Image (cartoon, rainbow, N blue to C red; front, side, top):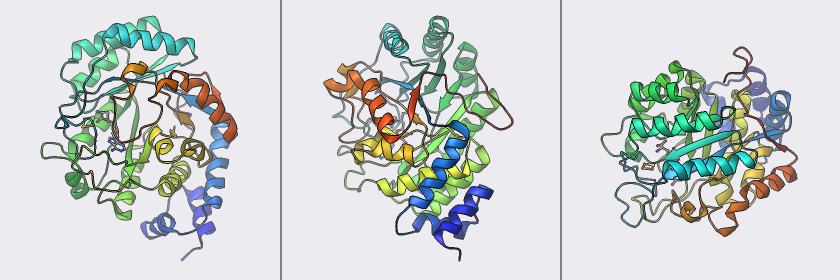
Length: 353
Ligand code: SAM
Ligand code: FES
């Protein structure tokens, strides 16, 4: 078996490892510096020290789904529900644009109130008012026709984590009615339509094994997404998984670095979940190869209500200054926030709108 530095070197050179070597890398006990350094060098070769910012607008916490891990699941009767109006969403964009955001991410539960017509109207108006911005949707599983309609209205990116590529594991995280096959179908439809697509998974979700993670990496190799979002699973007390411990920061960081080496061109966020479990989680994420941060642009009054997990950061009164706070954090980690649309830099595809 190769040593840890040899595994890192091979992964860096070939962007791949056989399953047993990936397992050894993921389960390695000990300092990860060699891995982080290789990931950082790879990221700097392509993206320099640039960090892209995405303005996150969490516009509804109603959801028809009942994912066992999620704090805004349908059956959580303790969740206080809210929806933002089209005007409120546009106000968030307005404020974000003035702060230098050129990507707006509209994320929410699967809320039937937002029919395709309503989503299209919102997207159309954002596109009209902010023609130089990317519009990202993250609103779950829809039909291909719906995805096409949103795309035609002006949306150009879509985030939909596959959550786990292992079928039994997927079954244990979701009630009957949700299917891994449909999640995958959505992701391939989105790609075919022409979206820049983001997928990903939680690290340390209940029942996850190293084999599950390897399957996640294999699925991502097949999908070849433009963005890959991973963050630790974090407990929420009002879910069926209330007694399950949160995921590990160390394993999440190691996986960020592995993803950077396997997908050098990917846009990888240093996630809020990482920042929630460790005071410097996002800075560490950047140093491990991440190159995106997603500050919250939602009105401060609703931020606490979009509670996917306990102790979520950036939800208090100080949250209005997310942009400035993150700028300092990114700076302290040795990178710089840039006001750019921040498209994926692929070898062959070049920049896409
Ligand atoms: N409804 C959309 C969807 O399903 O893609 C977007 C909203 S959903 C809340 C966004 C992501 O939050 C999920 O893909 C999941 O990975 C993450 N998430 C949910 N509950 C979480 C938890 N307890 N800990 C960490 N991440 C969580
Ligand atoms: Fe729908 Fe979490 S269960 S967003």
